[in-house]
Length: 261
Image (tube, rainbow, N blue to C red):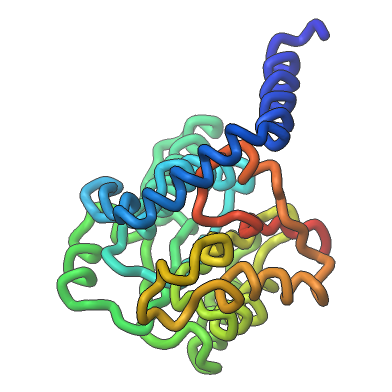
């Protein structure tokens, strides 16, 4: 293989496939995931000043997907402190910067069409204030309400109709029923060759006693919802190469690629 870039890409692909078959490595990653969830490891990180409550590995994966897809709109259910909205907005800002550089024009973020749309049933006042004060706020729109209420779904669909490339991230209530309803509502907005990312599918793989009084757990969680959804939606496939590459992720079986309309 004479092309160095192609050679390196082939080596990466080989390593990823080898990791998937490496039982000791997989076991160590599972141990790390379990113990780090118990220690609330994901709460330790922020993005451009806002707590993000995500694993760094998943943040890197999302960065790769956003660069690959180059979405005009990112839809996120679940806002919390707003770090994920800021993360997505910053990635879209970089896409605009690259577009402007390639076109030889000056970037004016005030007229960018790329946006992040966040939905949450309870956007707490101090979080809303901090998000709206952030320099990337012009790229962010927030909707307060249940993500599975018909009027909220209709509002999101109306906004998405103005965009051609859409990426979706689901990270709110983690019960099977709620996530399945979100998938039915928002996965169809995912553009072909883009992704619908369902977080916290890892719940299915963890001991039942880890969830205390939470309404979700093994048998009732985002992964069970994903598997049910895929039974009747062949336009989506699990991109297993992502979790094989990351080793540690809260979204095993949750990186859904849309392969057909």
